[in-house]
Length: 273
Image (cartoon, rainbow, N blue to C red):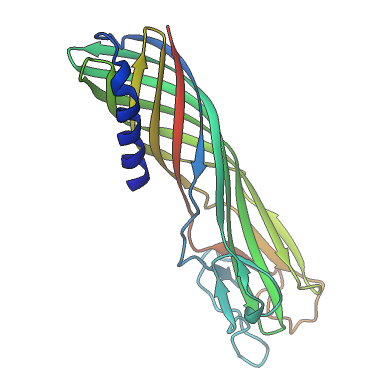
């Protein structure tokens, strides 16, 4: 939010010299935008297990001797090796760009509208577990694209060419889930939905430059539910293998944190008609 505030202040200063005559925001527009997706922050994420395949996660994977097979622990990132001392690479954000189209209506100083948006954020979120074997197990997810439909409401101020607004609505993302491990004994099979649904909330500022062009800055928060992806550890393996010790069918893995939380800061360029 501090980045957005500083950027808005800069835009206001830069545009003050070229203030437009009073503007009516009623009409349609097409936009392109670019910016950055901030690094994910899921410090408490871990891998959880369902050893008896009853659909309930939170089981402990034990060895034949009754010891916790995952006592070395977990990390919020991608494992660099088979033991925790090898470390983990961090989660990351990157570029965020896309296109949108919408329509606004103005009544007095109030402006309200609807928009549809397609974006391509660069986002990687991983979590890893370490077993006593030793071996690593990493679940990762990346966002392929996001489709969103949002409303927005704000007010025009100054000479009428400035618009400060809030926006909220529905979003659906394509998710690329993957699994990697150094365990060469078991077979691992992934399953689950490749889409995630959720909501978006944001704040923005827009400045008119003449009748047809405007530019602005925007902060957008997305919360997406990605709770369907599972990985099943199966045989072939000895009957004493921890993953088939409780149920011969195997053990399911899932992430403890179902939500993808994505924050983006963008600059927009808009053609209004």
